[in-house]
Amino acid sequence: MSQWVRDGWRRWQLRCKGVRVDLRMTLEFSPPGADEWAYHPDVVSPSSVVYSFGVGQNIRLDLDLIHRFGLTVHAFDPTPKACAWLRTQSLPAEFRFHPIGIAAFDGEQTFYAPRRADSFDYTSIPRGFDRAQPVLRGPVRRLSTLMRELGHDRVDLLKLDIEGGEYAVIADIARSSPRQLPAQVLVEFHHNFPAVGLGRTLTAVRQMQAMGYHIAHISRRGLEFLFYRPNRDPTT
Image (cartoon, rainbow, N blue to C red; front, side, top):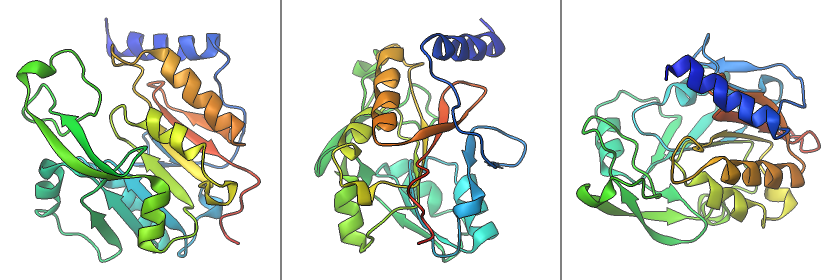
């Protein structure tokens, strides 16, 4: 099955379940011309607090936000491979890296190595081929814990690219105080993993909607979403 057919099938499945964009607004894309990561620029400023989880070897969104708005990005990834890759990069002072992951608890989490040696996509969800793959343990924190440790009373833009860990994290965020809910949440869902399935994404979408978020963008792949909470003004 071609990539185009797979992407179309995923989007069709979402539409059949009533999952579609329900808030039209100005969007910017990163990198320009792509549609994976979208955000609403009108409420982003130099004082915005940005948390970006899941560095891997892709920090284009983080650098785009820094260069365009002059803000600080707090980036997180607990895997040694991502840490080693970042040490080879020339990074601005506004890019602040933390070798920690996000989870629904504070402690250590098991991460399974990707199938391909050149991949950075470690995941906390076993995918069926993991028995032959090495595993590692990495430090993780709840979002509320990280905010307290870093001295932030709000997060204006939250990106979750954490290879299946987003489901537990979204459920944990749903238990947070409404004052701590990010204005914008960019999520890559992983219902393309056989061990996950569409049902978990549908549950996560409903949880986001119950917190007052609207869907402002769904990518062509049917995996990346932008959720926006209109009654949360991040500039105040």
